[in-house]
Length: 281
Image 1: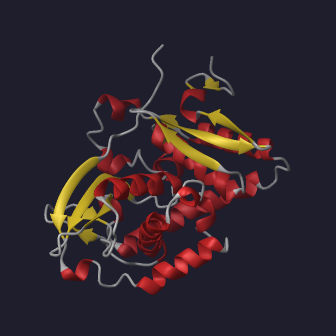
Image 2: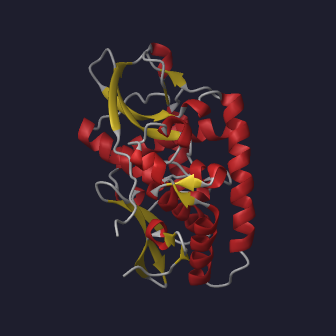
Image 3: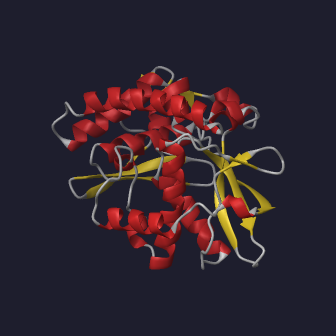
């Protein structure tokens, strides 16, 4: 039996930055984000769905880059800010200026940020290298076309939050962490089915399937391993249970911390056509 996978490899694009691309990112906003994170204070109700597990292991420079990414993505999540239109007609998030990190370091931070913040459902699997006139660069993520318009995206955000809140209400009725983890596992497996057709097509319709985002779980009811893993991490973290997304070359699953020990959870493999399981041998 071939086990389902479905992680889409990141595509990389390069373009030059326009002056207006990054001027509105204020250092004070980044500093405030850092202070809130250090004090463990959520700026809004969405922050609890992310994880600081990898963030806490970064250098100060890497944390500054992470915080800048967070400022931009939080703006897209909570306001009607439109995405940046690329020269090819695609969409991406606003660029970041002033980072002293080398490209390889930026990419590591960018990917850790992506997997640690599944609540930013509008990010797709394209990584843009933005170059500036002073020979510096910054790396940012693309945005799915359906989420580029700020007004439309806010409606999608409300739709995601409605489903998240409904699940959170059920999860909160569980008294023990392992009961909450089981409930989250079951809610995901009961709601979605594995999108084998998308994988068979080599992700030909990914721009409208959102399989690498929690949106596919909360709003379309079909996904692949990326959606399973990121929605599981989002709901566990939102329930106060430390959870991380881990990857191989073509698959995503989770590590979850219960009673001071880390366990593997793979909702993708557990969700079989004849039901779902709690271990896979």
